[in-house]
Length: 226
Image (cartoon, rainbow, N blue to C red):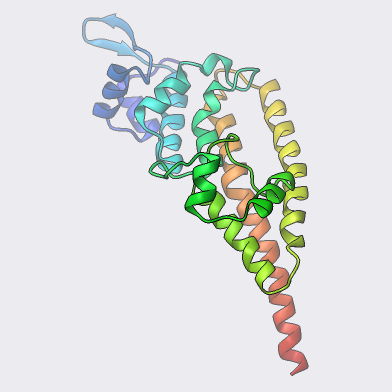
């Protein structure tokens, strides 16, 4: 479907100046030139504008990150995971300005018990991005486990988190493969929205609301018994 620039602006809720800027920066393909002052856009421009908006507003991706991703869009939801880069960075949960330490520097800086450290690695409770890259995120997990130990309570809930997280990650991978099977140029941004919303919105909503309901019921029972 061919679109005038005014129609693309209205349908995408994106200013004309922004659309032209995205084209200049290589985030959007060039419009089809019919005459010197007449250009036609299409549904690909519309889908990509939705995708760019989502990446910026929901994940805080930069133009350069999005550009790299879009360069691989024909391989998206396939054997190539290049386009997953912004998503992977978010899943890692490591702030851009985080301090990074080697294993030795990490243990020394945070004064960590080496035996506990090795145990948590073995139990998959500590999962650094690679074997020699640690941040405050790993230190906070170790601090939590030390608090469990300090009060004499087993950290079984954390171990169970690992078990269920591994199971859930397999389901999420299955979702990615299912989305791959139905991918085409028309549903490009919708597939990514499904993936982002599932991993970063619905998962948090369902798990936290489930915890809320259980604790709320326990609180009501306690009040009734009193």
